[in-house]
Image (cartoon, rainbow, N blue to C red; front, side, top):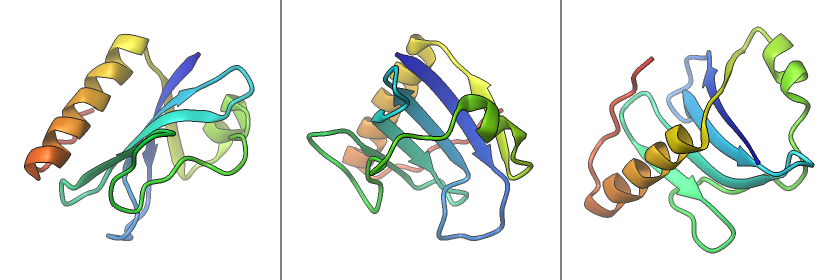
Length: 103
């Protein structure tokens, strides 16, 4: 598995500004967390999803391709960091609490 955090540089309030992804070896999303500028947070895996967040219908581009796009700031993260974001997202979704975006 690979774990990434991507900051999406845009101004649309309808799109997430931070994306956490757990990817298999073929770069298919296994789990995903999306954080919005207003603090909303949604998540998806194969069994459940919240808000408009869904797993991709095709594999992601290579990590190098994502990092080369000036619209994205990609960071490879640990499984522990992803799991922490996942647990926070699920808990905040359950309680409808905003997610605090940090660098």
